Image (cartoon, rainbow, N blue to C red; front, side):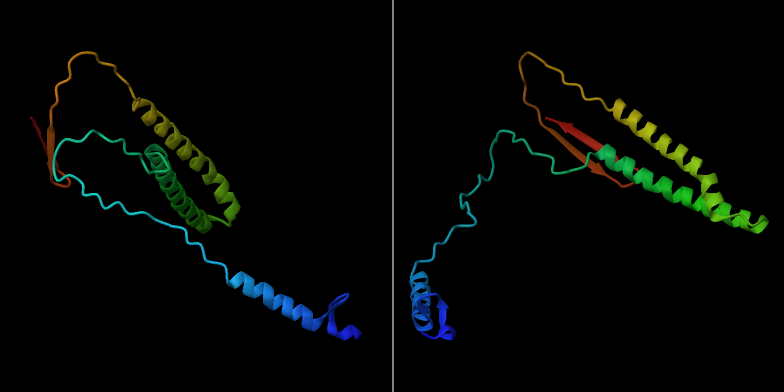
Length: 161
């Protein structure tokens, strides 16, 4: 037996090719299984009528107060950078001050501004406390229609039925 024409000990290359062909044909003959990936509900919604309220989850990831603090922090950083650059230009003209020295002078100002932003955000969040009142008694259904017009000087009109 020639060792160049064998793939495994004791199996000639022609038998190995035939076995491989048989395994591939056996696999190809199996049916393909399909799995549904979506579903469609063709039920018509009612055109009008009373429906019970449905809870709608808030899709936002970041709370509004945190986003406000982030935007204020960016503004403070940009403002401090401008003050630092202005101080650097003034001091550069007066003497040979290094950039590191100017940054060390403006760093406490940036720290104070960031602390003021954080304190303001904490106070704002503390003011907007959520209260949950429990009422007992008869419930009367009322509808409130609100219309707001205007951009800078807005006017809101509420109509209670």
